[in-house]
Amino acid sequence: MRQSHLFTKTRKESPKDEISQNAQLLIRGGYIHKEMAGAYDLLPLGLRVFEKIKQIIREEMNALGGQEVSFTALQDPELWKETNRWKGEAVDEVWFKTELNGGTQVGLGFTHEEPMTRVMKNHISSYRDLPRYTYQFQTKFRNELRAKSGIMRGREFLMKDFYSFNRSDAELEVFYEEAGAAYLNVFRRVGIGDFTYLTFASGGVFSKFSHEFQCVSTAGEDTIYIDTDKRIAVNYEVMSDDILRDLGISKEALVEAKAIEVGNIFKLGTRFSEPLGLTFKDEDGVDKPVVMGSYGIGIGRLMGTIVEVLCDEKGIVWPESVAPFTIHLVELSQGDEKIRAYADKLYEDLTVAGIEVLYDDRDMRAGEKFADSDLLGIPHRVVVGKTTTDSAIEVVRRKNGNKGVVTREKLLAGIYHA
Ligand code: ATP
Ligand code: MG
Image (cartoon, rainbow, N blue to C red; front, side, top):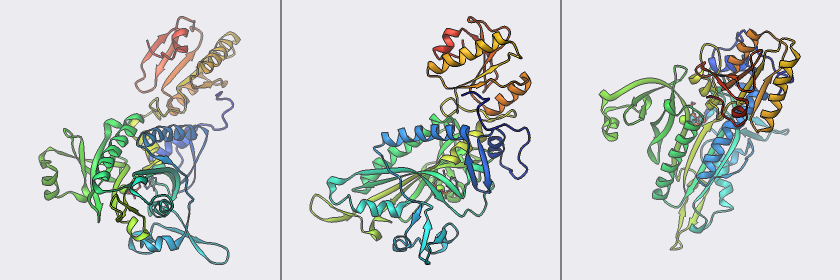
């Protein structure tokens, strides 16, 4: 894409009403726009990153056997009354409720266990229909008390929510382990694997623990205790001597850190299948409730975390896997038609070679172009200027500033560094 065509512009100053680093950088780069606290629009560059993150998650969820669906945000109160989640202490603060013309109440979903369970009643009746796994990328609404963490805590936000339907606790247990491994794959693939820990957190009626995936960051709202050798952590909320003993963790080995919850997996047991009547006939013809689990990742939460954890004083640093473009081609022709023609041709040839290029073809000073390039955080900056020849094209790596020179041939083959 030609940067001269991109409608978004970068800005030097951080927006005054934004205290979180992720939103400041993303707004300055033109990735997102803030509508109000907890509500952000995705602009072209932001949408590209979002879609890449979604695709990585989609691949991992498909590998688990997940079938993608897309449910409505509008929720029927009658359904939620059956599970005691329409009114009450735990949910009153969270729900956005509204009404139809005429006064009928509806809710805007903050999660989807209820509708997902109800739909499955039409499709699951026998042990032969199980196991089943569903997931979606769907907009959730939560009336969050504080929304000061930029795109990491939205009042409207996209969640990947995955639901498992199994025949027994033992079957769920096996799947739950696989899901945890898939989550670690996701966080590794988006570039935060080294900082992200499987974390023991509070469970529910059906399990002692749930598991969070906590990414160490000073921007985090949670406190965790990490056993760096075992690469696991315990959330402050459940920390106790008893629990450490249960987990075989010694207190001395633990390191305290602030962390961002990027994902959460949860054994639900029959918490929803029982009240909603999702049952199956087992091999002996006996009716049993389906054993469920749920598994969430916030896409904006994850994108904001990547920004927080990998950025530097110059701006965003995207890992290649989620970057909006792979190459930032910056031409420094300063009116020299020959250099301009060389850069134009290189842009076309890279694009034909299937490489994603943002081409800074704007008529601006080199310093401004480089500052924008650093802010945008595209992994490889290719510079075309006076000294550029087919045998020597300068490439700068965003993450460490390392400069190298490659041939045109290598560049077109996707080899950016000698
Ligand atoms: P938190 O403790 O941070 O409020 P939660 O425990 O309420 O989150 P879950 O209900 O477990 O969150 O949601 C699953 C995932 O959805 C979380 O792990 C997180 O990645 C994401 N998520 C939750 N709330 C938000 C939000 N307000 N904005 C963006 N992502 C969110
Ligand atoms: Mg949680």
